[in-house]
Image (cartoon, rainbow, N blue to C red):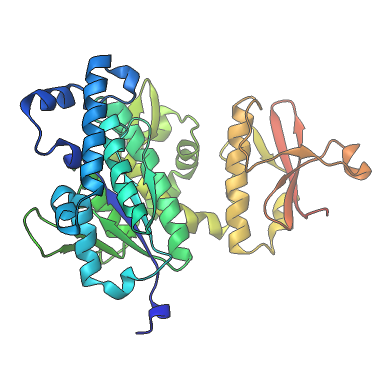
Length: 374
């Protein structure tokens, strides 16, 4: 196969802390265990911070000066990646390949990820570190919220890269069980290849894709307003939540949100539903004029999806008391005389289309889909 015909690869790697915790004495291990869930240096004592910073600097110096054999011994993450590259030399030669390191929201996790990133960068790899606030085991509620947010970021990013012609790989050799277990399930749906290298082994274990897609269309369709509201941070009633499987929801402080599994199911199903038709408003504060649906009859599927997303954003804006607007929404008054005098507003859809609307007190009325006024 010609090299230029090989797809570029986006590799997501889970990252643990073994690089900075292996081979240490009992005193240092005690300090690391005590500081395992620290997020900022101010969270730990100055004496512990000084010892850890010195240790991290020494580990980084040692690691960056190591040969490949030592690198593979010291870093499970890179051991798995380098093993995959040996098996796929042509795919590895693509200059557009990218490598994302998924790190916990801790000093230890991010420091390890930064050292690995530095090594990759010094060898010409394009890398970035991916994390979420609360992605640590100190607090289960915060961990699940972070995992849900991470799921959304990964699915949206992976979908964009896949549409851009990338192959998606998950390297789950490093990392922690709480994160890797869920990402393995995510990978069986969204990854082209998922691999793992057991400690001491030289042969990669490939985890197969599911032979089918997740399909929760019926349940989501039956509870569509509730899912749209939850996905956009709006509240739902107890009656609305009662018909949704418990595993897809997460209750916190008397509020309900999508769990990490609910987020995954929603993101997998939403594009198909949003492209079919303009859906009913998810909020009583966002109203459609009688003529609005007539103006969208010729809209294609991609534009229909954007319209549904803007309606969601308008609902959030309205229910938030019009205090904070998403950047993607950009509601503004039309300046042309024939519109300004009528108090007509617009929001952008794409380069060629706008939604026209009016606001009366708490309510927004969407008037029509209109060509952009350039």
